[in-house]
Amino acid sequence: MKSPQDTKPESWHRFFGASANNIAWALAEHPAGEVNQRDLLNAAHAAAWHWQQIGNELQRMRALMLLAQAHAQAGLGTTALAYAEEMRAYFLSAARTPDWEIAFTHVVHAYAAWAARSKDKHAESHAKAVQAIAAIAGAEDRDIVQRVFRHVPAP
Image (cartoon, rainbow, N blue to C red):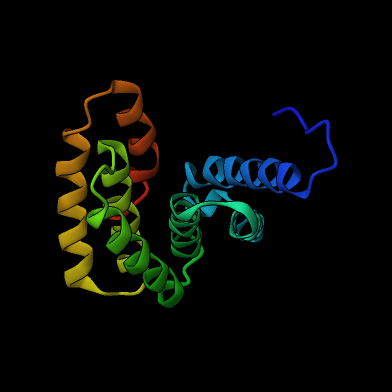
């Protein structure tokens, strides 16, 4: 990603928010035991902070999804599930949420529920994730979601 050529804070927030987001999602594609949890959490929180400064509601909710994922992967179930519940309410009620984002919503919620030891929520979201992934029209989008889903424990 190319750094901004201006001195506007908005440009730099966007640059650092997107950079930290990309790093955190790349880490989220690996098994929890192979990831430095501090790096994952730092990147997710940095992304969320930058998007909080300049992002719209969709960008802030995507950052919240990333926080839920990072906290779940780090075994921080209480905060993971709190973040996941909030972002799930947003994405499932939005009129034009794309199929891949619906799938990610269920994937991340399932992981957060697992980390929080909420067996019923975990099982329900895991089943919805399987269905939503199968419904993703684009093969590339489906592959991206599956790279994270493969690390979510089954019920």
